[in-house]
Amino acid sequence: MKIELCPNCGSTKHIKSGIVNNRQRYKCKSCNYFFTVNKIGKKIDDYYVNKSLQLYLEGLTYREIERILGISHVSIMNWVKKYNIKRPYNANYHPTYKILNSKELGAYFQNTENLHGAGVVVTELGDKFMLIKWERFKD
Image 1: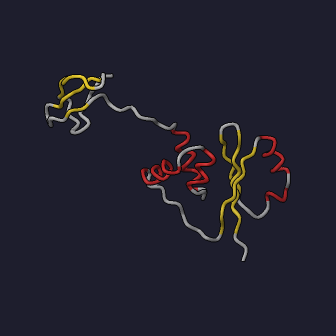
Image 2: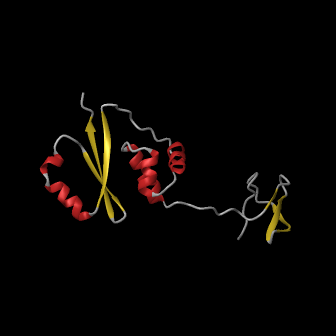
Image 3: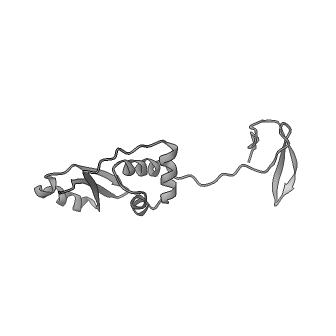
């Protein structure tokens, strides 16, 4: 792996400085910082980031999104902070959701009682569909 920048100061001036745990060690000539190869780390597909933020805006909690997508609620919280997502607060309604396959979704929309009195959003989740419905609180 080619090292391009010092992780401490961002300088391109570095030299080889030995081997530690079978990894090449480098020394930055600008700030005298010692470092090894860049950490690659794990990256979650952007599809799941977008889907998580969309579900968050639809009113689902972090833990509900975690159960649906299989992504840590802490990651979702970090994405909400990173992208500065603000969810409008309205206490007059709350979302309910169902995960359906294509046949179940077709049967759901054939019943006209399901289409009365609430907004509905359908979003794709892999080979299934998620139906989010807003219902107003009854006084």
